[in-house]
Image (cartoon, rainbow over all chains, first blue to last red; front, side, top):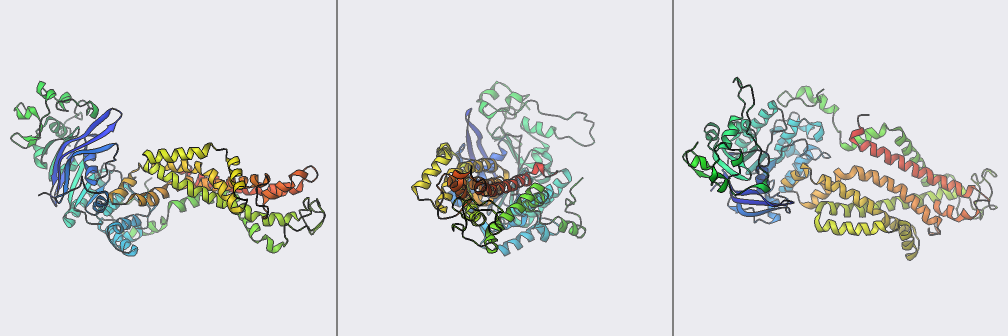
Length: 323
Length: 305
């Protein structure tokens, strides 16, 4: 049994276009000590998947229409609010995309980490603050003693993301969800944050779900990858396999869009078209309109995520051996 | 230019220590205080209000006299006798004693009314903005009900129903002025609850109660503090208005009561209404200057000036 298993998760939202399906039978799992990368364009359902695990889908308008999320076998979808509050932060924690806006501006960073500790552990405020300072030291913040008394706006983006990581790991969660943790940071800081996450994972043995649209981040961090498109997982495999031999035309497109240094490519590649709005998804494959290999069957019938030889991919063209 | 504190973490700790201490303790509140200190009108308002408060608190120690005692001939103009520098009113009561003792109740009613306004307004506005849905609908209709009542008339009804005393006056003012605060609080909550640090607080397992009072409310405070300050000024005027209409507490001297009592003789003697009027004017003016100063201090767009 994997540490965290998501099985056939369906999430719908009521919008002014009617009910739309944000997640359609999404299944994935992550083992202890493993990093699962979740890739896809904006609006593909990566963040909704993460928020579902945290139990933070705004309801209404959102609704978990079916499926299970199991942490150590315990179904989080049916867990009570009180139980979810216990789990949040203690067992599953999350790092957000924007370190600039995900810290409360009116409290010092030390107080905020201490608060996270006190929510789950029965310790005094003094003890929690000392632990917070130790955590700041652990995530590589110099002079943690005085930094703990700083307010978020006094720290740089990279430091704030370190603070977020310190807060997320403060109660040694088993699952750490990182929702595009480096998107807002510049490249050198990105590398430092990846190193830190890898170290934290070694020390704490946490499973990391890394949500990103950056293939570089995937090759750096992930053991396995789930590629998402329009609310479905369309390819899932070991990171190397997806990077080296992508199967689904969308995954192929993503990989070929990575600009390589030293190549003579003068133009940046792109995948033509955009993700269709969720309320306009038809019966067939959501990628069909952007796909060079699309045939009549693709527009009629949704492909299932099945292993067609190399590794699981949801594509009729792969199944039929046309690519 | 990069912020000097943003040295990459990989570099050594020692050289930055002096920088860190120099940049220490820049809480949003201390930053606002720094801005406020530079604002001359706001500072003038603070000094003015401090003088008024000190005068009403300790003035009677220096200048002793019961404001209800008839001490001299009626309508003695100011300066006519050294004993009563501001003259006497239509009954021959000492005006300076009235102003010094009347300030306390006036300010107290203003502050208490503002506190009641904030208490009701912030509580209802916070719940309304945070929970949304039917809670919001219900509370906002309730708020609108109070908002469309003519404030002064409703306060008059309340005061006449529950015999006039400082407390009933403060409560009446609070009950008619909270809708604005509620709407302001609700608007701030609607804005702030969507921000990422609120989701982040949820993600560490904080419960709603905690998120409302310790995450969102502190961030919603700046406009509320400004509004509270201005409410004090409005409440003082309101109290004066009620007293002027004869609905003040007749047993407690207040500025409004002085104006109300002497208004019939304004053509014979200008001073019994003018001095308490000026006292009210300067108090409300100073409070407004402070409110404006706080508004500027909390507004990040004006920080750079």
